[in-house]
Image 1 (tube, rainbow, N blue to C red):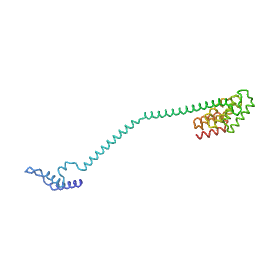
Image 2: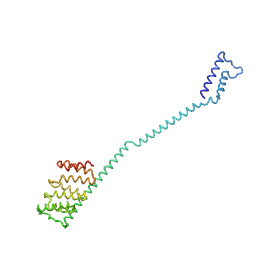
Image 3: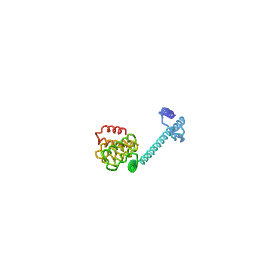
Image 4: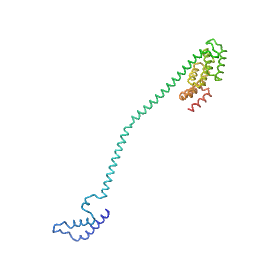
Length: 277
């Protein structure tokens, strides 16, 4: 519509210019508006433009103003969102994250200390249990042979050791433990004393009392030049493995690998267990 009005205005101007180009306009003696202004009024009437319309903005201009206002509001809204994001980033600042990481690390360390203390308490309880059983066995009058505390001959020691060994093989583990402990009480320096100590550990292991077995196997190392050190070391790793204490199990298995390189068969088994953890 605006384009049509512009075209009609140009067409009317061209007509006026062609018709009036040969003479100058004369002043109206009655004092009326000059002819040129009347002509322009007629043009506005032809185009349908009222004086009020001439002073009002066109619809296209109004649309442009609305568009500018919307763009400005959008810009203000984006600026507000950026300010909010900046505030949120300020709240989640790196110092708070570092503090959170530090607290999580402290909690993890405390949990590890608790587990270590629980393990130590369990081992101490196992030692107390073994000592109590030693006292009980020393005062009991079972059906098996009670040995004198001293003066036992080597032949009697070896015979009694074989009896206790057969008890363990027959799964009479409690009786076997009692006789092996009697042998140790009678002569802890005998050549079979370290074997007696080792089979006490094996008997506890077979009973599923892995804490008591750990105590027994560790005592094997107190005997000089024991031929059971490598087996006791392997069984220590296996006890911790059965208790699902993988860190201690790996440590004991690694001791076997480092200290007993000649025990190839045991090392191969230890490495298989390490690979499972």
